[in-house]
Length: 89
Image (cartoon, rainbow, N blue to C red; front, side, top):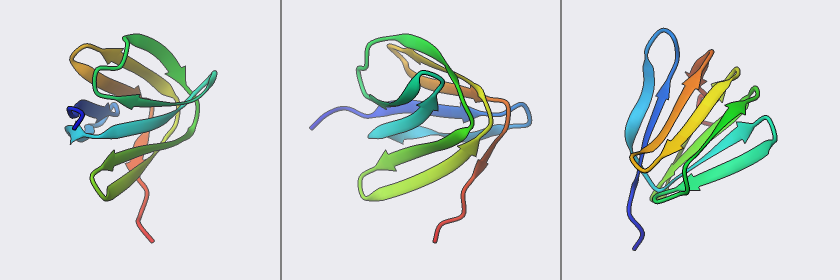
C-alpha cells in the first residue's frame, strides 16, 4: 500500500484543511493535476476551481479562487486566495 500524502489547504483567514490523505486533485493554470505521496516536487499557480481530497472511500471538495500549490518531499501545500468546502450532496 502506498504511503499517505501530507496535505494542507490554507486561505488568508485560516487553515481550511490539514491531514494525511491518499490523493489531491487541483485546478492548475496549465491544467488539472493530481498529487499522491512521494510526488516529484513542483510549484504551480492555481485557477479558480475545485480541489478534491480523497482518503480511502471518503471524498471532500473545496472551491478555491486562485493561489498556488507547492509540492515538496514533505507533502502538498495549497495557498488559496479564497477557499471554502463545497457542501456534500
